[in-house]
Length: 169
Image (cartoon, rainbow, N blue to C red):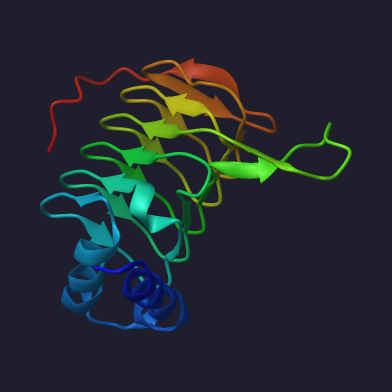
């Protein structure tokens, strides 16, 4: 697909297709826009995509309504059996507060298997959320999250440990 055709599809997604009530229609478009989309993935209504060519969503993951997924500053990988709550923002690109011209910096974001990100959380660039971790509602994740950790707050800090076999699909 040419660059123009791809950008046109991406803009059509953000202007209206993302609000279309049919899951099948949204998945049809996502299979053409994302670098990878696995089996049994659910992407809810009104999910905004920024730089979708660098976004991967693997098997059985759920992206709930009104999330923002950013792939402009690096790749965004959402592994298997991940649950992302409503209005969560995952950024791979941000402004550099130390740059005199208000430039941008970016980096990849990796969300490993069995992660649960509760509603209205924010994940910033260059972060890995480890296997089975839990990110509490409203948390802002600025650094890597260890596997099985439960993090909360601004900035997010470890507040507990998840005790789960993580064998669910």
